[in-house]
View 1 (cartoon, helix red, strand yellow):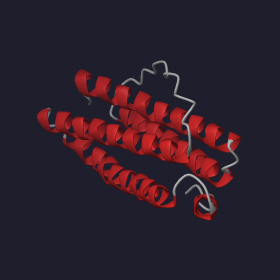
View 2 (view 1 turned 180 degrees about the vertical axis):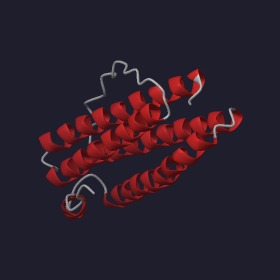
View 3 (view 1 turned 90 degrees about the horizontal axis):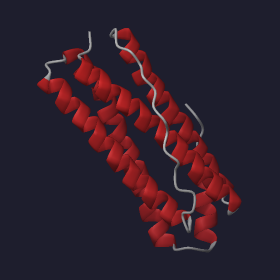
View 4 (view 1 turned 90 degrees about the vertical axis):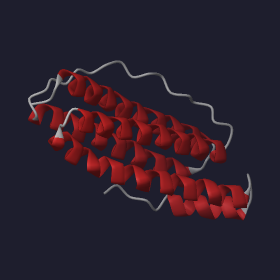
Length: 164
């Protein structure tokens, strides 16, 4: 059984994960409009993954006897200037989500909620991967610059990402 405090915090995380999907779809739209189809596809897959994260938490709340309460999803930014800004924004967002997950783990520890702490371990590991992926792409884009064959090649490479 979840405490009311943990239930509320998990519901807030569901909203953050849904917003993550929303912002990645906004990024995909921006990139598609600029003809970076591979990067747009990458962000669409990222959005789908974030929805899966939200549903994973949703299922856990229900399984633990909690009540899922959905809240409004904020409107995401839609003008990112260029692909580098898109991925820098994505990296910053992943760091925000990592902090949020870590705060949930801290709450689970404080509440001696071992089941939730164990459940959240998967998200902690996932966030390490998410941050590393975005950081790697940002680094590659910084080496390439705004234009040229390198950006075209990175676009093609990122377009190879498929949903799991």
